[in-house]
Length: 342
Image (cartoon, rainbow, N blue to C red; front, side):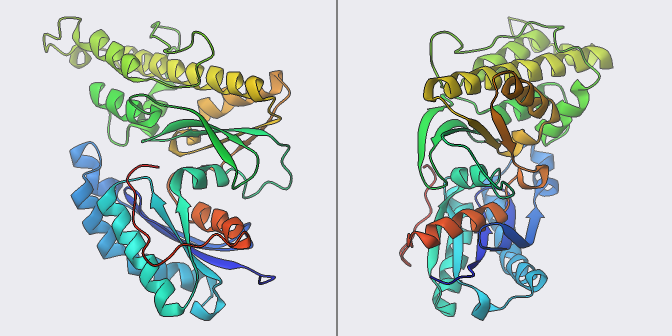
């Protein structure tokens, strides 16, 4: 194997077109992300067909920019890495096709990356040392999952969402409260002015030792609070004061955070974890980060959270994880296909 391993990573699993060049799994030489937030804003969520067309327009310019910023050419690359699962099939197809084409044209190995595992890697990029085993929490728009991590490549799923993921619930509650898309950042912003204990929204699946998540009931509780149990359609939000809306946002957010922290602590205790890893878009939430830190400090756990710049979808995490698969000789063939689920 090369002493220096330089990998081009590509990510198109949802609504971010991203490319990055990472050296030896740690040194980010470039990270370019073309966001589609403005495109999907008027729809209140990601439209797969529109996302795919935007990826087609952006993929080559983004890859070119990442290579230029890193000051590398094809001859400097050790491999091309692509997040081929999970995600929106027609969005993944764009990235997979581009990565296979480049790998073939440049005669480079192709490395297939699980998007969720890459989110966990984003918490490890800047870590000098990690005590194992670790509990890894992925909390994003499409996924809320807990893993036991023995290494970057050894992950065992312990629990996941049985309905809405945390990020999805944030987006849906933001819509209920007439807050702009994307929901997560706007719920967090609004919640800063609210009382997180004003409304006792439910925390689901906390009994027993379950490590699964459920946020659908919480979302429904917010809906009923705002529109009444009979769903008469008379949305109270229109007549709520800014303080009342802030209280709903804060109380909802606190219910999500309490659930995430309790489940993570439960999982850490079950496997005797020394470290907690956290990544994904919702991991950028400052209140969640603070609450998780308090829990880890109390129980003498080390918390490693992805930098906020790497919480949302990006390709640096893809290229970083690909380094370890490259070292292990885990390559993909040019018949690689996108997979909507893991």
